[in-house]
Length: 341
Figure 1 (cartoon, rainbow, N blue to C red):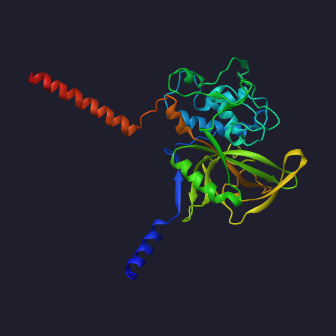
Figure 2 (figure 1 turned 60 degrees about the vertical axis):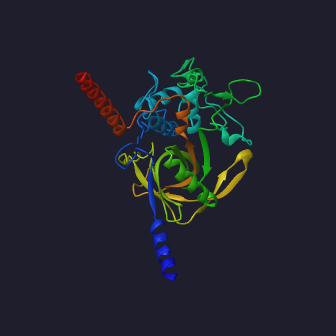
Figure 3 (figure 1 turned 120 degrees about the vertical axis):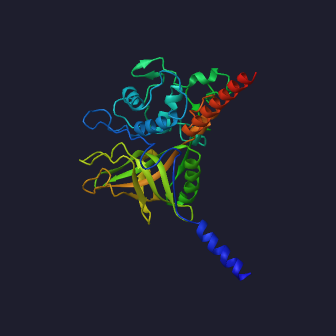
């Protein structure tokens, strides 16, 4: 019996190992995108949220047969830059919602706020129903309501106005501060494994100046033997500042001990919480070490939900090859049967 428990213990040690997970189709070398701010051109310095959303939209669209005329690749990022109010902050979730429906909506912070795409930031980053400064935009995927797929964007407002387009099954947010890291780790592992796109909200502390929010894109994560996050694989629209070369995909570790931060809240109040610092060998965009980064939360876009919208996935190369071989085999068989006749 003792031998059995010893073997079981050794087996359990082998199972409980640190693990690195990337989104399906993503590796350190490929599968990710990193749209960066122009820096030399005025007007995009505060568009980190749009750049992060552009990365996720590109990752999502590259897996599906998308309608003709929908921007792809770098054109996604260019479309956002041409459509937002000049150099304004915003929400990557709101950007995703606008891409789908044509509406970047605001909602007050109530019990349902976590179920809506955009949160109340005191301003609207994109004028509803416009694209590239032109009116009449209804989103690139509103047509799916009429495709008989059973899918429908619906209006959650009582007045029936297009002011709260709900995407409860498409977007969620999970806090990643010290007190909630265990839950966030489990949620993030599931999201990555299922191919959901993720952006991360972080706080940037500029010594002697202020603390402000920033959005980056997450492509993978490392977990310890207990399943808790130890580091993140990221791209950042700001990583090419201060003379640094563009890092592309880089790794940032969570510091071992959380730090107490006091952040500005609503109605001139302040909120204090415990947050983990993100540390990268790249140096990020603080050449003099005056800026530090703290992990806030993850915004998770369950892009696999679009499988229910009637969109068709692009077959994987191996699957497509097998399908082609099957067709060739069927053709050969029919030809032989024809000769036999």
